[in-house]
Image 1: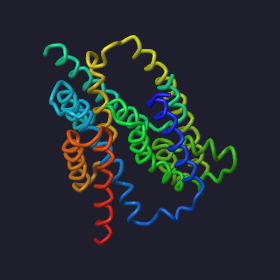
Image 2: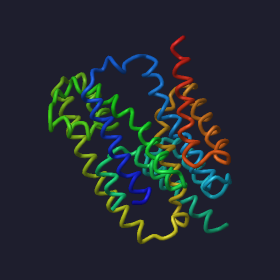
Image 3: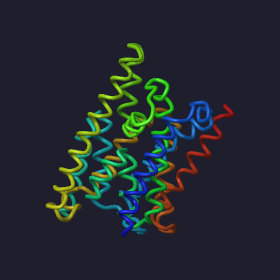
Image 4: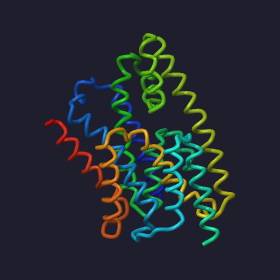
Length: 102
Length: 186
């Protein structure tokens, strides 16, 4: 079994376990302010880190290429309050254009 | 088939993108799952918020747990002024609705991707970070949020040449823990 299968099965199991656990345990155990605060920052740091790695890295090498343009366009689109699908499509289109002309 | 299974069984967008992103970039299955699991923690917190409203047991609780996501919880909580019944209806309708369309479009995407060939030629390699940016954008409310986000980008990039793939992303969870712990003293 390859690692993609492990990833699919492991992620599904882990995420479901978290969802079910949340439905089943009393709120007081995780409503501690410190835990809440950390939990609020977790998605911010992980998603941000993924943005950085997915835009500027290829395996363990760093580079600035057509993807950086796509990200910049996405940033502008979000600043202009564009809806999510438009943001993603603008990023893909601009990046693909640069890829073809470079 | 793996793509659709991931949508059916995980049903949590950020976690799905994360595990594929990490493994696709050469990370191990373990670091992929760890990143996805950390992102999945908030679903557990939503569950705790929803449980006293839904009051479901056994099989219904399993179904409720599976559709406990950003959207269903968000819609349900926005109905708070209209009473518990409206909150329950909001949760179930949103949860099932998103589940059906999420999986239909995943299937369409999986077939589409096979016909495409090189993802870079279609800009798909830029669509992934753009999607992450779209997901994190509404969470960047305060200046602290933005500073933390930029620090996480910088830390992950700085670690990329020296750490095994997958680790730079997980390492930024430490950043969240440090800032989260310090905030209490205010």
